Image (tube, rainbow, N blue to C red; front, side, top):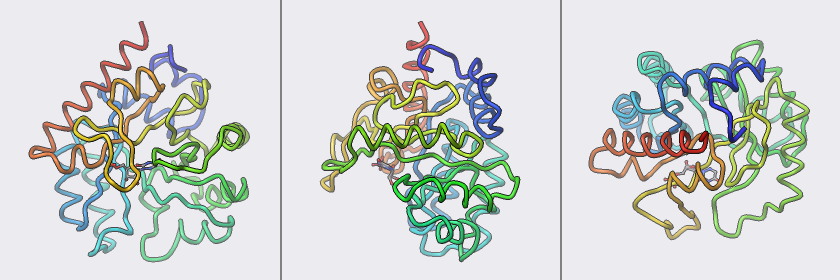
Length: 257
Ligand code: UP6
């Protein structure tokens, strides 16, 4: 995985969303995901419009938006189409399959109708993945499994991470990759996305731990870096996104040499 280009990895998988994202990253020359962690629909949409040209993926926490209506995912989808990025709802599902599937496909947010990707804790077992995948009902959908976390004191142990990777290998039709802090898998079919990336902070006082885009991609083996406050709190979010994107993509090109 680490020595292959995003473009060359397309042929290693039949998962439609992974293929689409790898192609997009290669063509748009960006491996940046912005975590649009802002409190109102308007703010998230405005940010998405500003950073859209520089990202491959926009990550939401839709349950943190105070004024969510069904209009929000519609407008976000329009922006995603205009700027050519995909959407990941970072719900970190973690219940029995039946419950997670209801949370995914119904309720206020109807996540399965608009989020290309969702994040999932592997803890409950793989019934959750088959349940979510059933609800995706043939749409181009997938999941990222949380294999490691960026936060201090995280309880995940190496044996757990290895078991998460095995679970993805058993469900490659829906598992698109991992949220991780290291190169948990060398399989070119799977994407590794790494949060906890910032150029301005090393911690946030609540357990978050940061490293640079270069470290995340070059040393830890991230395909995609996830940046939240490094972009959302910058004076000029578009300029910040451009800088994170350039640095993360250069580190990726460096990795190919
Ligand atoms: N996130 C992490 N660490 C993980 C998994 N997910 O930080 O291990 C998510 C957070 C947040 C984003 O939920 O949306 O990535 C990081 O934001 P930040 O750059 O502002 O810290």
